Length: 253
Image (cartoon, rainbow, N blue to C red; front, side, top):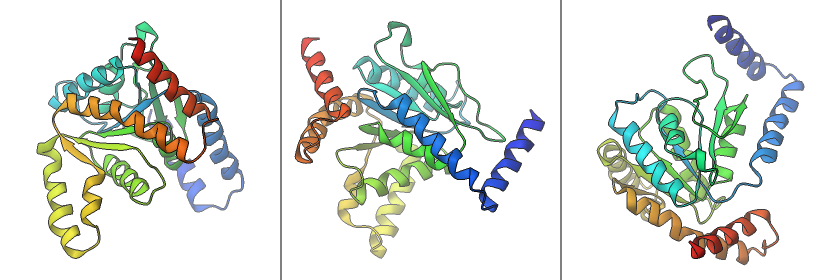
């Protein structure tokens, strides 16, 4: 394990500090594998959160319960594939029925990150940015559970993409009022006050502990997604067809 950690550290340093052309091909490989494996997915929800919270932690249990509720409504669950909150989200999916996917998008790190065993589909990436693209590209909602620097990075990246209209129709939920309230207070009391965000930016996310509210809001957003795709005249895309199939299947059930 220690030797592997050192090898990963050396590889990252080499890739970042050098002008190695081969690194470009490794990056392309990350993207190609992601597009190939995930391109046919139906409606999915990405759940972000800490790798450090154990099975005994309340947010682990909440995540597991929420993941079950979301996947029971027919949505695939996508996570970063690691332990903690990611494991909780993947383990909440009943993959034995074969109706939805429990997806783990792992990254090779010198510490902390190992692929959990509760996935039906998994990929391991070399680079954070290519992995992050896959985490957001194929989901119609992001649920952000409590976490550290990595989770905050994923949260603000998602908010920026929606704020700048690089993504549309996507819902973002912060689950864990006790944990996130100080952050929301900072955004409202300092960032908004200083004029670096606007009042409308505060509508880009929902802070809640109501798991059913999250599930119902995600489900209702499908209509918005369909209308958005139509407005862009992208009815021939695979994603559009999967959304329509999902809605028709839901009506039959």
